[in-house]
Image (cartoon, rainbow, N blue to C red):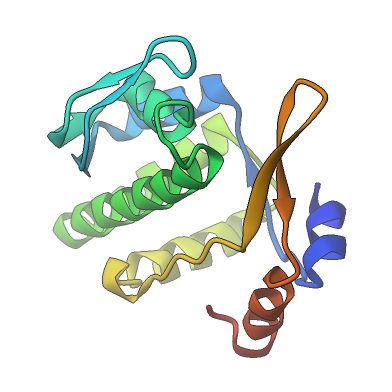
Amino acid sequence: MVQAVESLTGIKIDYWLMTGFVGFQGAIKDLGRVPMNINQDIYDPGGSGAQIPAGTKSLAGASSLAYVRTRKAFSGGDIARTTNQAKYLLALLRKLRDEVEGNPASMFHWMNVARKWTRLDIPPDELFRLAVLTSQVKPSDVGNVTVPVSLGSAGSASVVFIQSGAQSIYNRFKAKGSL
């Protein structure tokens, strides 16, 4: 996977962290509910299983997974799902910052959850360094850019085709380390 992303984007991946559906839900269960502002009702019984009314919510493991998996309930499909995944990651960042600000030792809990529920290639000393760095990042300083794509199909599968304009985003990230 790392080689595919590096080959596609030209961006070197220093570290990776991977989880599946069970690991994602387990991590959220161990970290506690994630506060989210949901802009619209999400009803996707045949896809992700999401049944989340609009408003300020505190999502547990199963509802968090349903939220980040939902695509069929949105006209933008995969693009909307990607946007919601970014919103969810920012909500996790806010939760991390709030918890570490109130109790700096809680960072160790977050690190233990990552080690318990994911596969990663980050040595413990680097995981600590990255956790400290992450706890200092303000969510308002984090941007989200979705590379230009078109939606289509290959056989019966829904497919996302990356457009040529994506290369300028990759180049900007390589040059500046940000989008």
